[in-house]
Length: 211
Image 1 (spheres, rainbow, N blue to C red):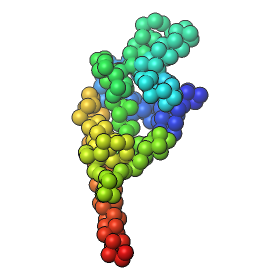
Image 2 (image 1 turned 120 degrees about the vertical axis):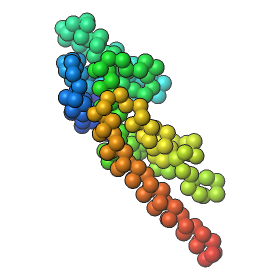
Image 3 (image 1 turned 90 degrees about the vertical axis):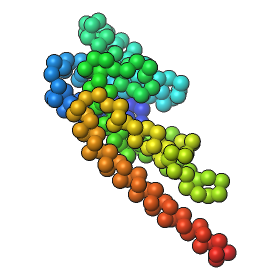
Image 4 (image 1 turned 180 degrees about the vertical axis):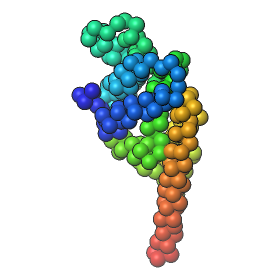
């Protein structure tokens, strides 16, 4: 797995957090195929490096193919490999095939939970630093652009257009409970960041008076 790690936000620690969250969610459900879920959790971002190199590649679809080949090459059954592959294929927001089976839904939820809360905020900023996105953007007059009005890549844009909407897309009861707690932390950070930035940029008016 380590050789397929693409960046700090999707490193091996992320893989294991998703695994542990998936197990926690599964513990609240019945008739979960744990072998499929564990394998899919461990392999879910195996295609991430390819997407980082080429944005036109969907890491979920790429990873699904890679995982299936890996499992078949290591003597797992066709049925098992297909189930794991389908979980991986459907774990991304970019997927045009929403999760259907319980294992697919659990992996989707577990991966999305790692976008929320203090961990999620840290991961988002780490990833955006790597992809050269801004923390925030200013308009032509030098005023702060709030996330909902920001059409360019920035943390504020990512929060309003992705992070803030994650909880409503989850499937399992346990994941929704965890998301509710984590979103309070994420929202507090976003609001605090906006407040501090607006307070800081008030100094712009003082410069005009001094000059």
